[in-house]
Length: 233
Ligand SMILES: Cc1cc2c(cc1C)N(C[C@H](O)[C@H](O)[C@H](O)COP(=O)(O)O)c1[nH]c(=O)[nH]c(=O)c1N2
Image (cartoon, rainbow, N blue to C red):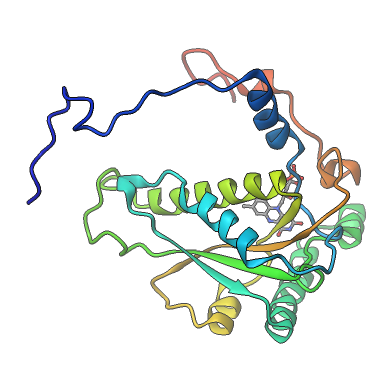
């Protein structure tokens, strides 16, 4: 066992001054958050450099995780035949999804572009390994889903870093897990969290595309914030 650090000794505990961000830096963070978009069709064909991909993955890997378990893996898929196969899994599931809507809503659904798997030069399948830190994980003892939540934090870090780098990201979740599992050889015990399409972009929607296309509008923040207790129905 390594010696237990004395928390009252700042140097020993690894503490450093928190520092402050300038107004410009703060504004940049909020601008990245507000202008991040889900990208389906605006991908340019130019490949992403290895250095850029490494920076994005490092941003993902800096995410918080329950018990610091870092349960994620990132499967990089550049091969066109693999992306074509993933698109076929999407296409089959998307046909099934369309049937779940009716009338005008089905028609509108059918008109939406909901992936960029073949157009984006890189896909990243983000997975969550529930066994990464052994059977008992600090902070996950009463809610086993915390490992997947941690992995979603990694996805969001990557998404924001990508926005700052001029890289578009599209999250695709319309497929049967078994199809992607088979395609990428992912073991049954490992959860598939996200299929992300990545590519450079020079244009982005200024509002969510689903809102622009009339599928669903942004809710008012005031309606979502409760004081002291649940005030919904
Ligand atoms: C877990 C999860 C899963 C999906 C998504 C997001 C998330 C968080 N989104 C993107 C989603 O539609 C989008 O985030 C919202 O419409 C808001 O738009 P912006 O992200 O602000 O552009 C998404 N979009 C899409 O076209 N096909 C998809 O399969 C999915 N799946």
